[in-house]
Length: 237
Image 1: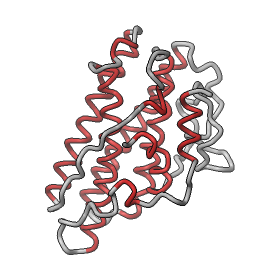
Image 2: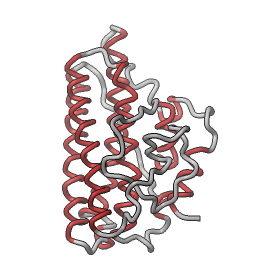
Image 3: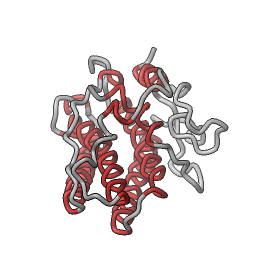
Image 4: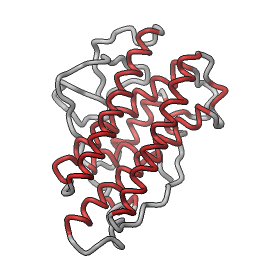
């Protein structure tokens, strides 16, 4: 079973049993101002911050961390460096915004990428880009899933700005995979980032090296907070 198949299997297990409290996200607004709308925005921002922590650590590992030696292609290395910087900037911006609203930023979790990479021995440029292609659409759809819940206009603008960059990441990664010959069927969709399939939240049938189109659709489909947490739960200790 491939690493990504394992990830998707774990993500689908226990659907419906996971609550926000499982990742301590339900209590993130405990020290925030008393108004319900501000509390809700802070909780959403802390949810986003948790996802950005995850992405930032993932790319940093391939940029200058323990997995940097796994990349040999110059363009793949450039992507790892650039995306690590972007995700770190997202972390910093979300952290500051939460504080500005009077909230307490969530502490960075301890991440475990072994459900995705195993012991790391089989990692290379192709698998790094396939993993990135798995993570980025989840981020896009996570932000989209919270858009109608955000109360503050400034918060919504900031979230929309980050969402746009995450979508750029998703498209750019797929374009690079195609150019490097890793994405041989760019019109095929996979279930982790479905754009037109009948089951838009399915996370059980995509294979590790699944092909994506860089520009697959006119509309992204949102994922709820609970659906996203089911996907990322195996990566958080």
